[in-house]
Image (tube, rainbow, N blue to C red):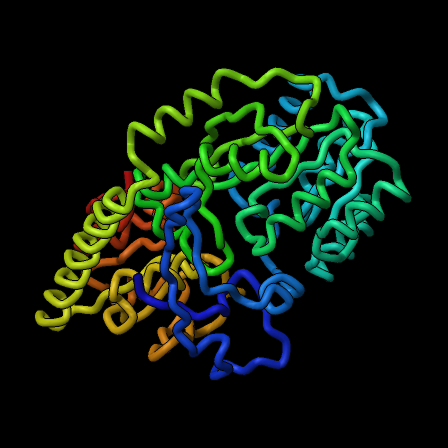
Length: 398
């Protein structure tokens, strides 16, 4: 795989100009498979102080996520009979949206998140949040000062942690004997089977499958007891873990997931060779489309400015092929700067003024609401190119 900068639109880097190495240096983005345990991960790790202390992405702005959180909280409380006044600790709690639904159900809640400004705003809004990274020491301190947690929860953060042993020991330290750790994370099988390439970047260090996770938790004195397949991020899992020897029986779903992973062969290098070939075919087609437009004297645009764009540009070899980007959010700035490129960011009206022949929709998950806004562009003969999970062409607003 190609390289991309550590700096992305997900976070700010105070005092860093546009030419700072955090934006201009292409850091290798390579997935490695552990032949011993079957875990899939990135080996080039960014500095978490840079990546998370000044995080700007907040969960509450994502389409459909608040509704998902409400269902999530109700499911955990109902499925595991969590009593009112129980302590719920969330790791990577961000703006406190998920904890808010537990609080509404009469729970005591506490967030832990290293993003200083987001943690402060969450606390001011009534969701007390410790502005720090969660470690074994933080877990022990919470247990000492607040008591044991009935639930520790983590939503799309466990994949971002390099030292997973310290994280899990911290969870073990804070959990009540009958407590549970529930987390959601991208499912490794979905990343590969559905070509979810835009989720592969340096914040996401791990791409979890159930069989390696079962081994991992067992090594640290815990037991994976349930897994649910959920829709978020294009394909995720909700995993429930208890202390080894805990009171709950393991769900048959765990064995079902493991059997399917064995059938696919996700612990074999040949499985990932096929994934690489699929991605290369998409890249070659996109580059050929862009080159053909430029040969005719036509421009090529991209829709969406996000961390997904930052990773897809080099993965698809489009750094020098996109003439400009458009985004609905005027706060995205005026240029996307990266290793060897400076791509102008314009408002969506540029599609009508500049009339690009094609628009590569980097925000491909939101293509339906995006296309409905731009019948004028299609009426002028323009075409959207959706790069994932396979290339698709759109030439109408509905």
